Amino acid sequence: MQNGFLQSLDPRVKSITFLLFIIQVLLVRTIPALFFLYVLCLFLALVSKINLGFFLKRTWVFIPLFALFIAIPSLFSKFSPGEALATWNILGFKFIITRQGLGAALTFIMRVVTSVSFVVLLSITTKHFELLRVLRIFKIPQVFVMTLGICYRYIYLFVGMIEDTYRAIKSRVGTSVRYKSGQNIVAWNIAFLWARSFKLNEEVYRAMLSRGYSGEARVLNEFKARLKDWLWLFAAIILIGTATIYFK
Amino acid sequence: MDDLIFALNDVYFSYLGKFPALCDIDIQISRGQKITVIGSNGSGKSTLLHLLDGLIFADKGGVNFCGKVLREKTFSDEGFSRDFRRKVGFVFQNPDVQLFCPTVKEDIVFGPLQLGLEKNEIIKRLEKLADTLGIQGLLDRQPHQLSVGEKRKVAIASTLIINPEILILDEPTAGLDPLTTRHIIDLLIEENMCGKTIITSTHDLHIVEEISDMVYVFGANKKIVKFGRAADILNDTDLLAANNLVHIHSHRHKDQVHVHPHLHIEHHNNSGG
Image 1 (cartoon, rainbow over the protein chains, first blue to last red):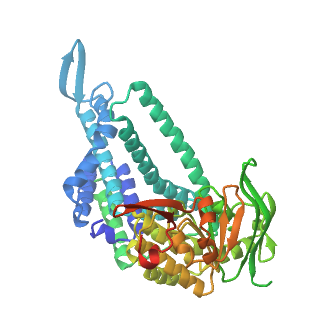
Image 2 (cartoon, rainbow over the protein chains, first blue to last red):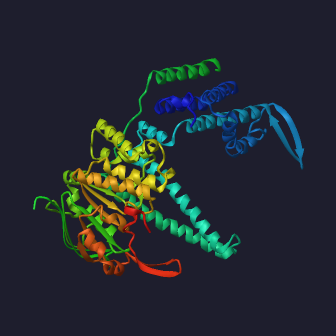
Image 3 (cartoon, chains in turn red, yellow):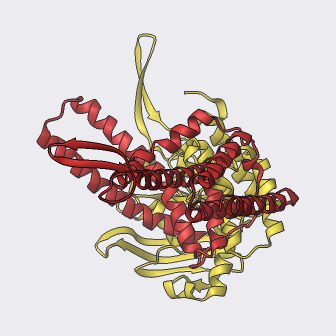
C-alpha cells in the first residue's frame, strides 16, 4: 500500500468522512454537484499516490454492470417523457430519447460512478483488517466482525486447497476430462471442501478456547486520531457543505 | 505431591463413542518436567494433548489438573477456566488452525486480551517476543502470506505471550527446515530452564533427547507401550521399530550394500547421515 494522504489518516475518521461523501452523492440532484464530488474523489486518489489508470479501470469496470443497463431505458420517452432530442423508427416502433431522460440517465450514472469511486478509494487506501476494526465503531457486534475476519482469513486456505486439488487432478488425468467425470470431480471437490471446512471450524474453535475465548472476543483498539485527522474531518464537512450550497 | 500438575488415571477416550483413541492411559506430570510423547500416526498423541488442554474430556478414568478433575462442567466455572488457560498454553499441530485473525499481530495478542491482561503489558510482551523470535517484520502481515516455519513461530508466539506455566506442543518441528527446528528446540529448552513444564508430541527422534526428561511411547493399540528416560527409549531399537518410529535403511558404501536401522538421532549433533 502506497504511503499517501489517505493512507496516513486514522481509518475511523477516513471511513466516517467517506460515508458522509457517499451520503452527499446520494442526496445531490445536479450533475455539476456530482461532477464536483467525482473530481474531488480523483484528486484524493492523486494525492494518495494511487495510479489514476489503475483507479479508473477498477471503478469503471463496475459501471456497465450496475448502471449502464439500468440507465438505458430511462433515456427513452416511454419512461421519461419530455422534450425530444433524437427519434428512431425501428420496425414500426418509435424510440424517442428525451432531454429529461438523458439528464436522468447521466445523473444516475454519475451517482453510481462517484459512489463506487469513493468505496474503491476507501478500500485501496485502507488495510482490510483496519476496515473490519472500523465496523466496530458503527456498533456492529464484535462476533460479526470477528466472523467476517475469520471468513476472509480462511478463504485463502480453501483457495489454496482447491488449487492443490486441481493440480493433483491435472497431474493424474491431464487436462482433457470427460463431461461426466468432470462433474464427479467437481462434486467430490465440493464435498471434500465442505468436510474440511466443518473439521476446521471445530479445530479453530478449540484453538480459540485454548487461548481463553469465552464467547465474547476482546480486541486491541489501537486507533489514534491526531490533529491531521480532525483537520481532515473539518475540511470534509466544509467540502460537503460547499457542494450542497453552491450546486443547489 | 505438591509439584504434581497432571495425573491421568486409567483414561479412555473414543471419537463418536465407537472409535477408541486412547486406552488405559496412566501418566503423571510434575512441575518443570520435560515430557515427550512419541508414536506412529494415529496412535493418540494429539488426542492426549487435547485432553491435557481441556479441549476434550475422557470417557472413562480421570484427568486431574492440580488436584481438580477436568470435566466439561469444570470449565463452566469462569474463574477456574481463566486460571487454567493462563497456566496451560497449547501450540496446535496445524498452525493454520491457530492463526485465525486477519493479521499476525492480532493473532498473537488474541490470547492475553481474552484473559484480561493489561494493554500495556500485552504490548510489552508482544515487542519482547517478536524480538526473541525474530518476527517483528511479520506483525502486520496476514497469516496466509507466511511460510510454514514463520506460521509455526507465530503460533508459538501466540501461546508464549500468555506466559503459561505449562507449554503443550503438538509436533512443533513437523515440516520445518533444520535451522528453524534448532531455534524452536533452543526456545523450548530456555523456557524449561525458566521453570516451565514442556509437554511435546513428535516424530522427530533426533530432538527427543534434548526436550525430554521422560518419554512415553504410544502404540497402534492406543496404549502406552513403554515409558522411561529418553536415552533408554531411544536405545531400544526393537521397540522403536515395532512402533514405526525407525525403518531399516539400506545404502551403498563403495561396492557393498550396508543395512542398518535409521534412527535420525545423531543428525542434529553431528549432522551426519
